[in-house]
Structures are given as C-alpha cells and as structure tokens.
Image 1 (cartoon, rainbow, N blue to C red):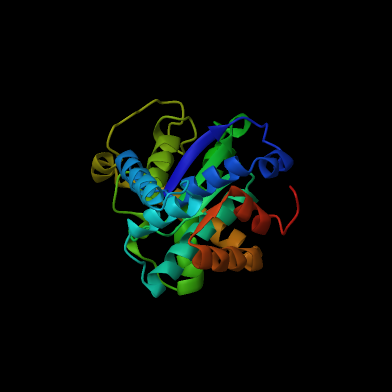
Image 2 (cartoon, rainbow, N blue to C red):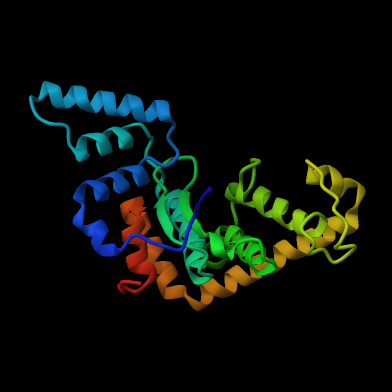
Length: 257
C-alpha cells in the first residue's frame, strides 16, 4: 500500500537528522509501526511502559519495537520476498521520477507491505506528473512480474489499492482533467469508474491502455536500475522496516543527495 504525503521543496538537511538521535528513533518507530491503528500503538506503548516499570528502568526503543513486532504474526519467507520486491519497486521508481522523498518502507505486517512517500508540491497537476504518478503506482506490480514472473493480488482488491488509485487517476485524466483522447474539454465526473466502464467500453480501453503504458514504463525503469532495485529489496527483506535515511542511502548509492 502506498501512503502519500505532500511536501514543499525544502528538505530537512541530513546533518540535522543525524544531530538529533530522538528524531531518528521516532522515525524508526514510525516506520516500524506502519499499518497499525492509533489504538494499537497506544496499547503497545502502555504495555512497554509497564514492562519497563516492572524492570525498574526507563522505557527504551527496544521495548516499543518488541511490542510492535509482537503485535504481528511472522511473515512467511516467500511472502516476505514478494512484499520486499513490490515495495522496493515503488520506491525505486518514485525516486527515479523525482516525485519526492521516500519516507519509509515496511513489510512486517503479514497483510502486505507499506510505503510512505512524499511529493514535491511544485510538480503536481501537470500531465507529466499524473503519468509519473501512474507509473509509480504500477511499479509494485511491475517489480513482481520482473523478478517473480507472476503477480499477486497485492496491487488490487480494495478501494485504496494501487490498481484502484491508478484506475481512478487514469479515469480522471480521460474525463475531468482535460487530458482525454476524446472530448478533452468536457468535464464528466463520476463517483464510480467501474459503473461507467460497463456502459462505455471504449473508455475502458483507453483507461486500460494508460495503465498498461505505465506498467511498461515502470518495468523499464526497474530494468535500468536493477542493481539498486535488488539491493533495496534485499535490505528491506532483511530489516523488514526501513526509515527514510536507510532507503535514501541505497537509492542514492551512498551519496548525500
């Protein structure tokens, strides 16, 4: 699942991140806790405090991390690799298209992976931006095809899934954003693209063609950056959760930017 975060173009310097250990710990915990509800986190912190109190010591990062890990069943080996490739695909394409920072990746959920990504506000709302967004959303599926030669249902199945969001964007490009191949100046909104496709098969063909083009483009980016893609997937498989600095280190080849 891809969670988004709009940002401006001013990033916090790396040195500032490194100079504040507390911020670093909070980012690591936030990455590890992706997918949990507020109630889950509140309970985990409460239990960690109780554990520390019983040990007559201060609460530690390890107490909370252990609580988060204990809240989730272990992810089977093969499934963990699939999650790792899927989320690494999103991250590599997001970075390659310069959409914004990758804030964190997590495959330690048992219910699919999570990535938190940011977007540069100055780059939004153009046709190129929407096409880049489609490419990023289709990158997880492209990664599975590229490495595993078959896909899972992980890209779809829910209204906030990659396929649902990509379909909505492609539909809006055709019907409401002025980028359509047919009658681009007409504003024709609808709450349910699926309902429209049943009555307009030609529109369904055009929307699907946009998704296919985005999938092919994502695959081409991953093939071009295969060493980085595999390195990130391996690191994510091993760590199961990576914060922004760890992801950035691999995406930039160890460079500071």
